[in-house]
Image (cartoon, rainbow, N blue to C red; front, side, top):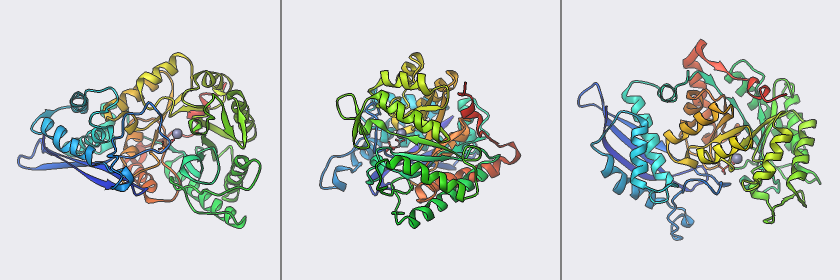
Length: 439
Ligand code: PGA
Ligand code: ZN
């Protein structure tokens, strides 16, 4: 039994310089009387959010941080959560998370804010691991019922567009997928080398090498087809770094298409209005031309019909990931599974708001044969909980940005530590995750 001694919260800053919630949960040490353990966690924040996400509570007080303060969420932890759980014993994460959901009492965590609830949920998970003398990934893997030894393939977002940059690219993320390696550390090194090569290529073309929110470059490609230019530049960078596209390193996209809809059931893409079918044809063309293994949110979260036809057309060739579409919520994922929409889900803890519900969604995905990709948000912190979560669940993939900005690198560094700790017990999933869809 783990007795909660204290819960504290504060307003800190995220990678975009906006406030976010930090929570600390103090437990009595279960074995050493009089000793305490403290778990701490920080909550991330999205920019291209799905409408079905749990509520991120912001103060809206324009005099502080442009209305983005989180003092109300912090106060909810101090005044509502802390008094309700302090002094109580919780033997399992799910018991604590059930209590948190009960205090809130709403389906989308609108009363306390998912940022308040998740901060406490993650901090408890950390404290619980410390109390048991365990690493976070080992504790989470025993909760999830997995071996917890699989280092994820990093989906590295090296060109940023959409809402994460202001370079006119509709598509939000152009990622490299170094899946053709035996070890995470080798895959990461290859990805990072490509990032540096891309910088050189862009700079030689006199294009900007400034980075966007997730640490990828955000150049303005002065071309009729800037998206194809982005893909071609990345292909060149892979070759310049001495790797083979389609053997060592593959490509992935997060279109975040809900952000470029025209409000009338269509899409505005490269200056013209497109239907869902037009967009599917654009993607098919790219899949023919480039070694793309994964496309996330290729269509809008409201375009379920389009999604079904996207899945029919491309689901036997590549991974199709629902992010805004599923918002880590079992309710939407179930609909996707039943209607044969997508074949993978993006996992973001703050879309649903507790560790337990996140694990439940991942379990549902695994049981239905859907891949899962654990993901950061565009607004991040130095907290590297998602690195542990990815290993713990053996899901095999992580999306945590490019090879710059410490908010992104913190997760990669944690994965390097975990790989070292696991030693010869560690596994790397590599290509099999994408090959399983090929028919
Ligand atoms: P977000 O972007 O964190 O701004 O939502 C990440 C994504 O869409 O995957
Ligand atoms: Zn996304």
